[in-house]
Length: 69
Image (tube, rainbow, N blue to C red; front, side, top):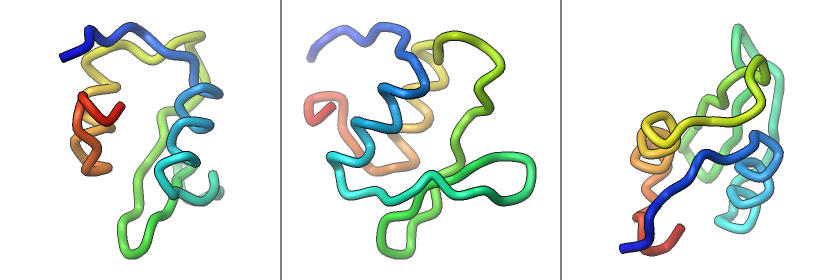
């Protein structure tokens, strides 16, 4: 299993596009991306990078394994 590192928000969005997600769209407090019936909230761009813990939670919600990532 590859080790995860903090990632920039722009890179996260780019990689989610490769997994078939569309967006990001505006809505409520957070932007979100959509794949089929799954709606995935994105963190706001207040910090420069997204930490490993948050990235793991996002991937789990998206149904993406660490090996696929």
